[in-house]
Image (cartoon, rainbow, N blue to C red):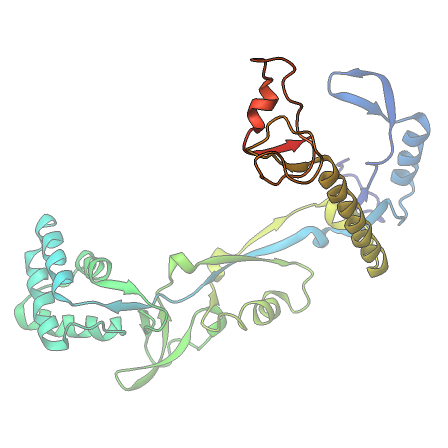
Amino acid sequence: MLTNRKSDTRRGKVQLIDASVWYVPLRRNLGKKNCEFSEEQIRAICDLVVNPVETEKSRIFPNEAFGYWKVAVDRPLRLAVDLSQSRLERFERTCAKAKEEPLANLARLVAETLGIGPHPDFNAFMDACDIDADKHGIKLTAKRKKLLQSELCDTREDAAPVLKKVHKPGKATPDPFHGLFEAEVNGKACVVEYEPDTNLRDSEQVPLLEEGGIEAFFRREVLPYTPDAWIDPGKTLVGYEISFTRHFYRPAPMRTLVEIKADIYALEQETEGCWNRLLENHLEYRVPTAGRHSRLGTGKASGGVGFHGVYPPAPQRRGEETSAYRAVQGGVYRAR
């Protein structure tokens, strides 16, 4: 029930009532409806609403208990550069389709300088590209840089993070929590931002009532497993979710070891009994290939072939053979 005219005692609070077990069956179903509240149950629910109290079926929470921050967790993009012959040939074909032949020539020149690799530092590769591009009058536009990154690089966990922005000294304060890291670039200490890897991007839901807020949750639940992660504050959202299961679900108590052990023993005895009955009802009889009409239970039939058990009787008259008798001649007969 929603209202914007709450009393002072109810303001800023939410009451949840679990009435899932309060019902009486209908004498006749009405479509999918097969139960309803009785008059007594309706009065009990109304009493809890009018006089809100904490019980096993009635819980009262502040609004913040249902809220959470949804934060985006980023990790740096790590690229290794491959300048092998096969990779360069494929890059040349791509540049030909994009009408970027000068970029393919630039990649050849850089490969002669750095070697085939793989090179675990994409930033050093781009510095070499900038130097050669200035020498040969090639302008490295954003499109060409993107082409170099997508065609000549592969992600590797042990590669150096890709730089996105380098802040001038004194212009930014290190804040690893929000993606501002201290690093050394060209021999100078500065504050940098790394390019995020969209494939590694994740999100976390932090309760609004979390002690210490987002930072405490992040340090406890994220940094121990991904030390290079950070939070993008521009993508943090606030949401609310009401889950009755979270507040009212009571798991069934676990059975004791004694009960489990007794069940295992009972299953073993039942299995053993089934196996014994199976053996009794599925007996194997070895039928002799000689002495067809012998009905001895044990010993040797005429012809000297050993057998045991009793098999189907011989035909009563000449030329009259039963299908069961023909099936067991010279083989194995299983009685059921």
